[in-house]
Amino acid sequence: VSASLDDATLAQRAYARLEEMIVVGELAPGEIVSEQRISKALGIGRTPVREALHRLAANEMVRISPRRGSIVGAIGPEQRRVLFEARHPLERLLARFAARHASPEQRRRFLAGAAELVAVARGGDNKAVIAVDGELKRLLVEAARNPLLAAAVSPVHSLSRRLYFTAVARPAVSAAAAHAAVYRAIARGQEERAVARVDAVMAVLGPLMGIEPGEAGASSPASSPRAARAAVKRGRSAALTRGATTNTAT
Amino acid sequence: LRRTSSSRIRVLDLLVRDSRRFRDLDQSEPDLMAARPETSAKSFRLARALTCFRLLSTATSTEYCRTHDMSDAFALNKQRRSGRGTIDAGRRRGAPDGGEHDARRRGGEGRESDERPPNRTDAAYEAIERSIVLGELKPGGFLSEPDLIRRTGFGRTPVREALQRLAGTHLVTIVPRRGAFVSQLDALAQLPLIEMRRELDPVVAAAAAGRADVASRQRMTALVAPLRAALATGDNATVVEVDATFKRLVLAACGNPFLARALAPVYAAARRFYFAIAVQPSPAVTARHVALIEAVAAGDGRKAAAAATAFLAEIERLTRRSIGVHAA
Image 1 (tube, rainbow over the protein chains, first blue to last red):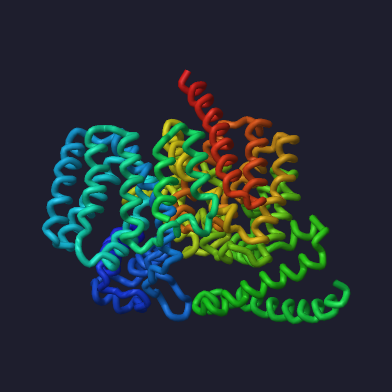
Image 2: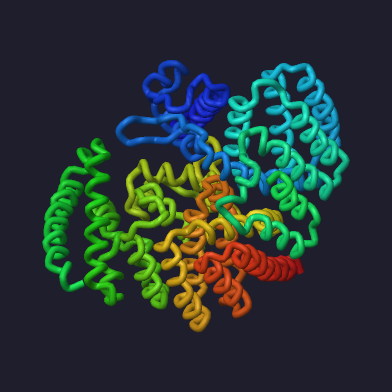
């Protein structure tokens, strides 16, 4: 058993490294990742590397083809659409749980991080934005204190970051400001407000990352009425905003 | 139908011959087959096609489906390693009313649908998950790889991969230096899960309603009868099985791997908790469950989302009541 656990730790390390390489484009979409080469490059045995690749496949970062090995996945329009479809409710949950459960220390970090995010975005350094954003996302997941949600959101965040990196050449101040508003609401423990701010973030991010206006609802025609209905059902005005933004964008 | 029957028999003969050859190889040369995954995959595809053809000609025979289904390929594997009864068989004996539903469910597995073709890791995962959900593997119990290999009949690699995935779905806890344990059943953790589902269930139900293909819709519809039958006989194990099948179909059909991944562990935890607290199926829950299945199968996104919310409200009521009772 102990051998397999050491493998697990190594697999984690291999996973983190490979994910980073894919996010920043060191490994390009369509590139074939050879188990052997990665194993050599990282100095990690083939078994943990294989395990890491399987996890990456589960996270939609690579595709495993029985003949050819692991292929870095491209992010096509269809994947962007399902990514956003999943990200919206998951971010709403993260914001709600974080606003509820964050420790005083975490709330302070949210406030400081929000200010920093806007500052680096204004500064124009995309790499710095990615770094601060990554830090805040980790804080968000930590503060939400929900391991299942954390696991669910991990591939969504990885891919979103990758998408941002490829889609946005210079930092988008509007997106940074929208994010900052979420973090401030979380810091103040305002659940409903934080959730509503997430809706605003998604409305800004959609067009930025190449989700065509209305595309998110295109193949599920029930999207907007669904949001409206859900809002009536739960008495949450926030979901109405979600439906409304889709329509306005169109 | 009659016109195609002779060619079908010819194809069937070819399939039988080929699949036997591969199965024999699989039995006599397991290492060779393991070393050549494409051959193994071919044997599996053949077995699957074979079953599909058999089902076409004997679709009415429940008994046949029960004994000659897709688990054949796995059953061989099990016999080879253990020579004793499988979890599957034990469950069937324990729940005779599940037979018909089993047959329907398995019957569908030969057809093309949204679902990924099952592989050994998936099957090992499902077998272990079922044992945990049904309490055959006790909360807090140690999971030894050799025992699981014996129990499920799968090899070391699928069992290890299944354990990793079970750790990912939080049904299993891996303790460094000590090994894998069945996670404790935490009643209070159920409420955040329900909160997650409030946000995610309507989205995934609507997406599945919009994107499911004809085969999955049919398989969903076929679940209604066994669910109603289980209500009548008070058979909760079948309710849990039907629910597991339905959730699998929905998550495959929703066309969103991110949502599927988010919800699979949530649903597994919910099933486990439900089986632990519910003495027998409730008419109210079953009615909402059936309404949800029918709405998704009918392809009405709005109705499916609303039905998901209504079903969840019923589950929440049940959960809160049981937590209240447990706390008192």
